[in-house]
Structure formats: structure tokens, C-alpha cells
Length: 197
Image 1: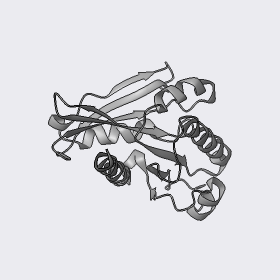
Image 2 (image 1 turned 90 degrees about the vertical axis):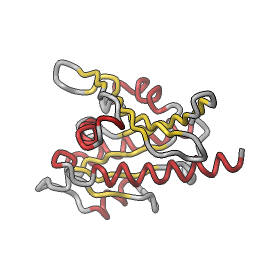
Image 3 (image 1 turned 45 degrees about the vertical axis):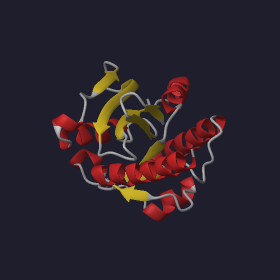
Image 4 (image 1 turned 90 degrees about the horizontal axis):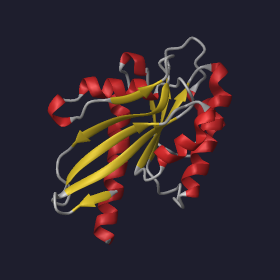
């Protein structure tokens, strides 16, 4: 959270994290298409020639005021490929909340688990208390014929009460619900921090 007192602006950062091809960029593209153009920035995306996210996707949303401040939520995705681990950590730094996008495909459970552990390690390296940090898990690609039941993915990742949302991001299902869930958590955390300050 960064506050520009002169402009009365509250800058918040939400990062979409998960394995390669889980649907992180798709989430941002759907959000971008769904939000009023007057309340969002252009979607900035750096991709490889194979249309994979190389560094990050970025989208800024404007919301109503909190404590007299105008919140601007910046949405980022991390590159899913494991060889971009340093980039993922850089993008995750300073996050106010995280959406973990899990791929429901049966063959993707190991990739989900590795990305989940990787995310938790990075957050811990920033001295963040995982029990109090805003996280939402999105179980994406629920329409796949090989989709693993939710309770099994939850067990594999050990989400332990973390809020979850089922989604089919390519069809737009669950995308805005996920954004609403993480935004609600982040705003509640910010209000607690502003009161305590």
C-alpha cells in the first residue's frame, strides 16, 4: 500500500500468481473487457512470440473512496514458467493481496503445488504473515473433462480455509467474483492498517 497524500490517492497492488498457462492473463483480459473504460487503464502485456507472458500483465482500476482516499488497484500477473522465478519474486514484492490461479487439469497438479510453494516462500521472504495476508485461490478450468475435484486440489495445496472461487476464465465465469473476493479482503486489510496508523 502506498499513499500519495498530495493527490489523496491510495495505490494497491494485487498479483495473480500460478503455474504457466493456468489462466492468469486470461483473468486480466476478461476484467479489462468488463470494466468501464473510464475506470481502468489500458492493459499492458509483455509476451513472448509464443504468446506466453514474459514478465507481467498490468491493469489499473479505480474504485470509490476509502477514508477520503481514492483507491487505485493495480493488477499484475507473474510469468508462470519456473525459469522466471526471479521475475516472479520482483512482481510479487509490495503486493497487498494475491490471487492464486490453480489449473484444474489432472496433469497440472504438480505444477500447481510447485507454484503454490514458490509463492508462499516468496511471501515469507517479505516477512508477511500468511494467516493475515489477503489471498484468494481460483480453481480455474473447471470445464475440463480431466478437472480434478475441488476437495482434492484443496488438499494437495493445503489451502486451509483460504477463500476459493471456481472459474472458467476463458468463458468469463468466476473472474469478476474472484476479483471481488480479493478486493474485499485487501480493502478490509487496508482499513485495519489505516485505523491502526
